[in-house]
Image (cartoon, rainbow, N blue to C red):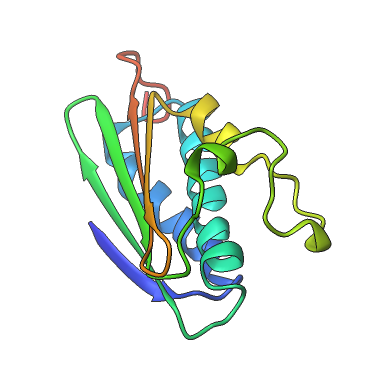
Length: 142
């Protein structure tokens, strides 16, 4: 599935619900579904707040690949990029302290997903690739 939308804060919930509905066909547990929705929310919010500095003219792109027992998400923007990825991934780091951001976005992604890869080039945007292996015992559709 591929999704593209304007970098508006209200579209974060649209992205979260759309991804959750799409991955429901794999019959994830409620915890897995909640974790994936949270991760989508964090990554999309990062794109909107940090990538585009809250300017609505940017676009956020999401692709979701489903495998037998895994979900791969790619969330990308064409915003300002990240100067220092290692620093940005540190707990409590935020490039927008004046907005009282918690600086926990990447930490949450790393805790909820099995793999997190961040690629970024200043001036050209950021891509966050996330992968989660789902449990064999299915809970939602039983």
